[in-house]
Image (cartoon, rainbow, N blue to C red; front, top):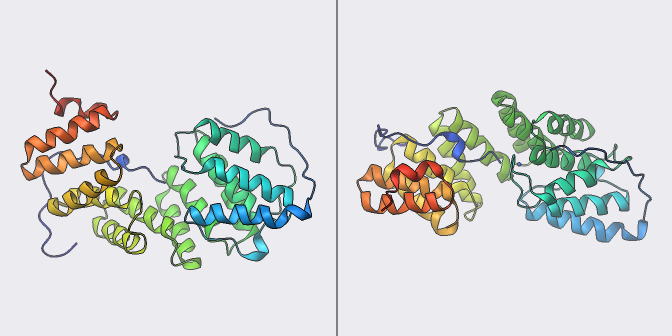
Length: 289
């Protein structure tokens, strides 16, 4: 924060958990041996890499990539299912992705497989243990794979092992300095640890690299609000609600920022939108007739 940052407000603020960090175990899955399909390798590889890049993740080093065409095809299908997934809120397709990956018998040598399995487990399973085991296997198979270290960070973060998560995210950035995902997650951990300068610096860097990042304005707006920078928070949270009008968290925080600034009428409007979008805790701030 700069020297001109306003003092922190005494108004009650939302807990850090309003911004999610980042991502029912399948049972009775039969392991399936994969038969290599060399003619499909190039097409399957292209699909998988397109999905990885679209998600903002760096590709694995060449020596760490899956070679079996049938396995790569399965990874690509699972990656499609996991797109736009959320940790702790599994959808049917997320469970399908985990089942698909869990049925593989001979993916052991591919770090890509273990990294994607870690993601599926982190999204679907109720605890981070399985995800952490898979992520650590990916790192063991390929220590130079930034995505694998990021997966370790995600699992450690969910387990609230913040120091270990920070170390994993920092290693991901050593390997891939332009990797936005671990940078954003470091900001969230700083916010959770009340390191507001660290959080703001991380979110500033994220938005400098990716101005359209879907959650960075929301996260930075929360950090600014906690720090007492109400004008800055208003700017970020107005952007967040403009870009994602269906995000109840963003409307709730915007309501708090507006109320803190004294704009009580528009604050009530924001709280009512948050309530309509499922934020039950906005009910006391949204009067009904």
